[in-house]
Amino acid sequence: MSKSNKGAAMSRLHSVARLARTALASRLLTHGFYAGQDQIMLSLHDDDGQTPGQLASRLGVRPPTITKTINRLQAQGFLEKRASEIDARQAHIYLTETGRDAIRAVEKSVKKTEKQALKGFDKKDVKQFSKLLLRIEANLSHMAADDDDAATEVDDASEGEAHIEVEAAE
Figure 1 (tube, rainbow, N blue to C red):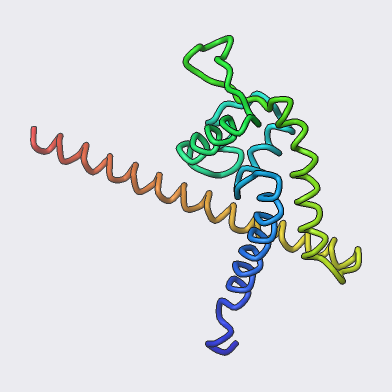
Figure 2 (figure 1 turned 120 degrees about the vertical axis):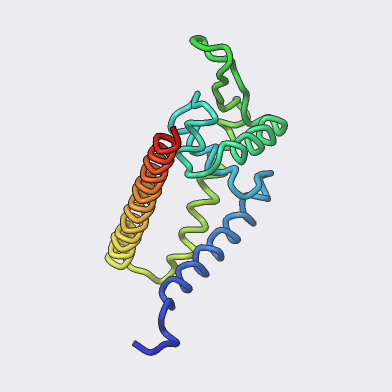
């Protein structure tokens, strides 16, 4: 492979993902949603009453990011926070009636963007493409897990070294 082609697939994947997000964001904006809000709405549509931490974990983002987006969606009237019946310190997030009504618009925007992106593909192509994306996702997910394991091993080793140094000083 020539040097100019190295990383071309990842560069193309990144470019396509950015274009897809931009197209979807444009459609969502016509319904009063900003980028990323759709994922929270759809996640709550699938499983209403999640905590901010559960949403962050499910969507692969940091809790402060979720909190800001939840607050914006709440101010827009799409979500409401309720104290947990088990632990009043914990909040659960629910779709409001307005939020439930807006789900159709979000789903329609996603579907239109997907239709635009896959224009000219036959069903076999779409199925193969989906399989390839799942493989890429699995590969990168395993890599992230491997990186987390390696970081934990380094942390554990560092703690062990610190423990040994403390014992030697005593």
